[in-house]
Amino acid sequence: MKKLLAILVIVVIGFLGWLNWERIAFVISPLAGVQQSAGTTSQPGTVTLASAPNPRYRYALLDPTTSTDESFRESMKSKLAASVRNYVPDKPKDTKNGVEELVGIHMVLRMVGTLPLQYGAPEYTIDIPSVPALPARPDMTKPGALDPRSDYDQWKHAQNAWSEQYNAATAAAEQATATLQGVELNVDGWSAVTAGVVSLALLAPADGDVAFLVMSDLDENQPQQPAAFNGHPLVVVQPDPVGDVSRWDSLFNSFSSWSASNGSGDITRVRPEASDTTIRAFVKGA
Image (cartoon, rainbow, N blue to C red; front, side):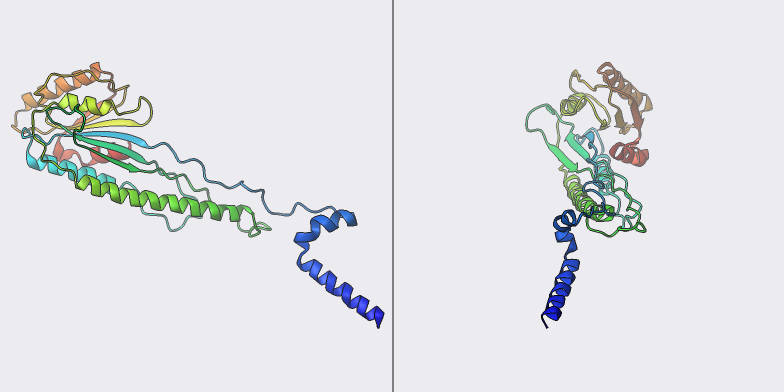
């Protein structure tokens, strides 16, 4: 009877030990002279999200003065808002092949006015955060692919973090669109165009993906002022409110000469009716 009881105790202990081997193996194995196998799970941190990329920096000047037609400034505001509304693509439903990074954007919009360099001049700022790339899902056919701390387990955690950041970018794009749609265009005064551009150049970083957008007829009513563009490009959407091509060209030539003398990069000019693609490219990058 005692032998039977001893056998039952050994069997029960052995069974419980088998169920909890992972917890006690590090104690029992050395005593029994058994080397533990490294197993098939990966080391922590082998699948992680990279750092989010630096954002694009965009600085835009819109002319709401009476020298331009009301439809011009309204359409420019709408085109800018539409480009921001579509900035973040729809969230991918299938992520097993990975997802490319999303470069965020920091944009400042100011108005042409008499004193655009004055503190308190109307300004609208939007920010859409960057989202890091999500790596492709690890091979699910490998032994131990579903083990705790496996590459797949780590990838799932990375996917959850990526998803939260993508949702934040989508929400920010919606807020940014609302901000631009609410821009107040009843700003009147003299057209200090270059001073308005200078006010933006003072905010821009010297390096990085920086670009400027000027939406104005470029009819300058104030003296031109110095700026520092640091080689960054300028996009100009210039209406011709009076239908005089010679005057239209003369205003642009004066502006472009001033810009080049202050270190601007490439200067691109388009008419408002052909500006959709140009404005989208300005916002999202070429």
